[in-house]
Amino acid sequence: MKCAICGMIVDSIDEAVDQGWTPHFYDGDEEHETACPSCTEALLRNGDDGEMEVMEESRRKIRFMEEAQPDPFGEHLLLGVVVSEEDAKIY
Image (cartoon, rainbow, N blue to C red):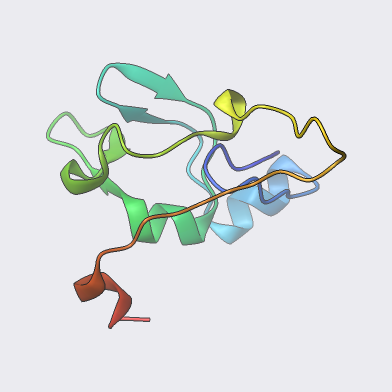
């Protein structure tokens, strides 16, 4: 399994369950595949309907792995996460 946000990979579904991966989540009406525990904690919340969703302040601002374009110069993938100055103080 691969995190739809950061690209982290886990070897098996059992390992993902043990580590607390989110099986799917929404960004508005768009459904996305799995999210690792770190991305879940930092970017997702439990929505009013009980489904996991991107936090309001991050909605429509994340570039998901399935949308990422391959690097024309090699095997590198550029990934960026925007964190507010206030949130950065937590880390």
